[in-house]
Length: 102
Image (cartoon, rainbow, N blue to C red; front, side, top):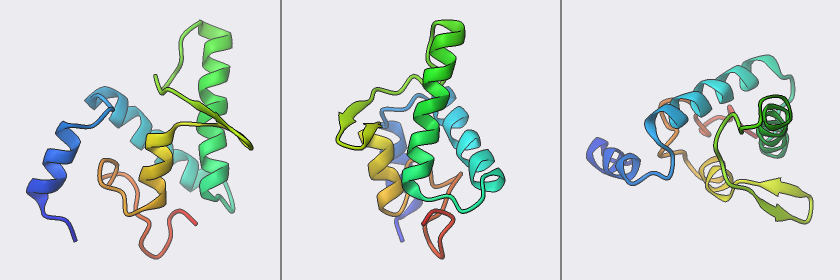
């Protein structure tokens, strides 16, 4: 378990601004609650599709994330890493222990 001081320091150096972090965190909670049988891959794709839809409709991304094109689709590497291990930056919003995210 990471100490609160270390978690706070990691959040301070986060690539996510506070407003972006809060928007992303609450969006992840919403998706985890309302989408059945959600996996990490599905969650990453939904986040990307939300951004794409928002760009098409309003001309700006919803999450302000930067994506890399991988073989199976576009992925935000920081979010991928955060969802792959025990979350640090998003620990107030999600948990991997006993699997909110598969």
